[in-house]
Amino acid sequence: MLGRVRLKFEILLVSASLWLGLGACSVPTDDPATTVGKQSIIFQVNAALTAGECDDAITLIEPLYNSENTDNEVRRLRASAHSCKAGINFFPLIADLAVGSFGGNGLWRTITQLFPSSAGDGKAEASYFATDALLSWLNPGVVVWPPYDINSSTENPGSITVSDRTNASNLYLSLVSMSTIGTLHNRYGDPNGSYAPQQALPWTTLAAMDETGCAYAAALLNLSDALDSVGSAYTALSSISTAVSLVSAGFDAACDLGCTNLCPSLTCNGCPDTLRHYTACERATPTTQDADACAAAGLVTLMNSPAGWQ
Image (cartoon, rainbow, N blue to C red; front, side, top):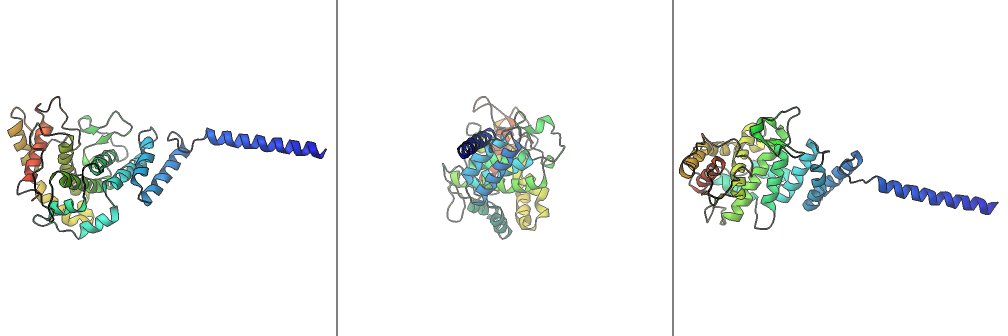
């Protein structure tokens, strides 16, 4: 009798173990298509970001960001993961900006100092991906006008119109845009010990204008837009907001000059609204006239002048 009871108990244990094992396999905790999986991924991404494990955070968030389960929280985390890779540490960076020197040549030199980079470190590219996520972090209920939407065929359609996005998105976008500018200065401008350029930025012709040059021009416009929208609300950003505003007053004229010199058959009427995304300058051939590409080259020419990064 005792043997039969023991046998039944052992059968129950084996059955329970099999059920638990099958149950664990049938509920994948990192499946972005499930509520449990989504929350598990979010928890792990936050933990990775807290530990400064940027690459792990990116690897974890990408499947969820590209799934139908994405939302503004996921977009924020994707932006945070790539911003981590780009060298943005939010609160220390805000503190540095609050005491930064932005008078005279200080604006672009300070941004160059804050975002060191070299070829192959992935920082500039990460700032592009962070920008994508931030441009898709929209106010609830916003309907984006088709000429101003980006990534419309993805799970994360965005807007190049600053008022379509949340204040938090625009605040973060101002920092990410600085990262794009600073990392590209370091890679292509060969800054000296005072963070002034020793060589001109290269994207001043149609043939030279590529995705990198377009990303640089887009970052200039996004920085201006974002700070114009939220800069006055944050005391720590007031000095840089004022400095950027003074320089950006010449952006439209620079875009027009780029169009006049490089695309004489086209008219820009200032910087094209669409030149807020790094893919805006894509065209059939390097010599194809395109308003975004020519305007972007005009902005780069401005930044190479005494009115820009010197």
